[in-house]
Image (tube, rainbow, N blue to C red; front, top):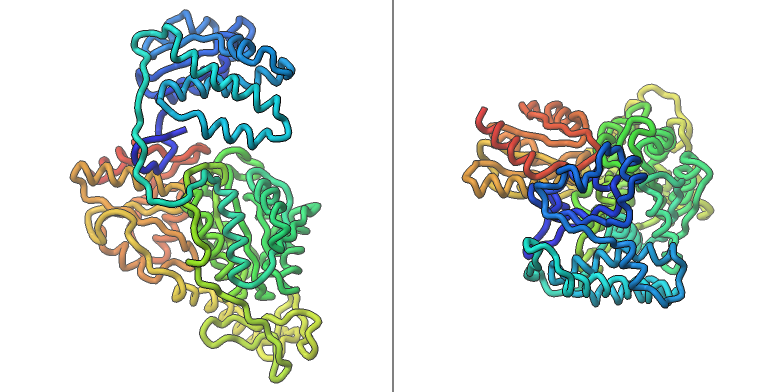
Length: 548
């Protein structure tokens, strides 16, 4: 958890406090702790057996491992059991409350109000009042311990002033939640219902769970037997006049690739949400990565272009989801919405938006049989007609075999196939005329260096850029939301800088795309560890590259 008296853009490079509930936690996370940080040890779990299982040959509490840290040793397990004594819960349920006991201690240390946590516990366990009572008792006991215990003299309380924020109603949200709400609002602005077909996969499964709670808003959810069934059901729902949506992660998107081609050639609206994780294959299911950009733009057989959008923060998922629905329905095309496991699970405070501020983009279905044919296109968008099956006089066929440009019948004509391929590509590229021009997130529009990112690297790049600018370095930051087609002015912007640095959590996919599209000497910075970039590492890299 990272909190401050100012806006926070990342989870932070290194924690100031580490709570080690057992030796394994200490072994894994001690290396991440800031130098001279505070270590709180749960003595109740530091027995010989657990110490050996964690891989220690000696007791780390006695061999000098922690000499350079401020150490607090407490039998949290014992004190938690004492705090909930008399409350009708099992010992297992009581011990689960030790996290709340520790949180109470942290609330004392940082002068944080416990009441919001108490209110949340009462709401969360409304049907289990004894569980709520036990957790609240543990929370309060941890706070009292901080007030009354004789802790080491170097341990003291801190006051973190409230951050200045715009007036409004705020809520702590995850990327999964904001994606769900964005899809719902997007469908409402289009005047359509949602059909969400999905198959469980880490880390995308919670999107299915969340959307299944929105039945009262016209959302239909379907847990399919496999990835192919999931996307095909969504395509069928779009054919029938709903917003077809599906989700997955890298391996599941690979399985959906043939059906993605079907959505492209049938020119039906579809939103595919890809919560990226470490790959290839099963890879690192619980770790984050940005390695599906090539897959999103190019990963299908044939020439199958589709627009690609990526979110930069958990709250940005809301706007990106709405934008995905808008483009999909306006241009009759599947849209790939790239998110990441990091954003799916990340939480941040979010000012609840007013949906009335978003302009509607209602869908106009074909209704007249006069001069109707399924591939009659809008002159501006090149989107074809969307006719709901069963409409009198609007009978037509769709499918994966190429169709005639004029009649919509099956066609093997060479020139027709060439024409249809070019039209589908042009339709996608034309979307560049309907998206905002690329802005500079931080810094000047020309200079010595620009750092270009996409997705969840936003916070780390932004913070590193600001630090470097405060140190007098000439560096700017550009963050790209629309990854295909790219913004019309991006090439011109990139041409205004002497050096271009592209940090990515992959082996250099965006940097290759930028070199190919704009012939610029972009430099790559890759990290494929399953972990987000650290601000300090980016700051150092910017400084070193500017010195070269």
